[in-house]
Length: 154
Ligand SMILES: [Zn+2]
Image (cartoon, rainbow, N blue to C red):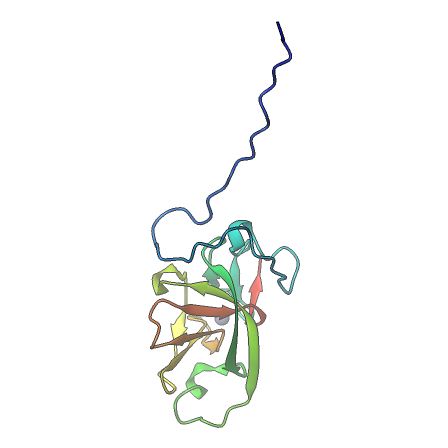
């Protein structure tokens, strides 16, 4: 009789992002991502820390609320949102590549929107109105981007 029967250690397979919101492409395996900063990326490719306004500290996203996403987006330089209107077409800014992606605007704790600039709305801090901290296209109602470099993580 063999007594030393051991069951193999089972690796718990975690299902990323359980609950609601289907439609994500079935990617097998965890994509290797390098986030510009230590410890920003939590489990399942989501934000591991609270995303806050870099200026006033107002909470924008709770931990785990957004997915890390790489996409080249142009964001004008930071300023008060009153100066971000359609009248200012020749704006300086940066092409940013690292973002937190949210598919529902109600996921945000606090966020403001500028008026449309072409079919783009910029996201701003709801409290101090500094921005843009993020980007949204009217052509894609389920994609709201928050640029990692425009916010702080606590
Ligand atoms: Zn703020």
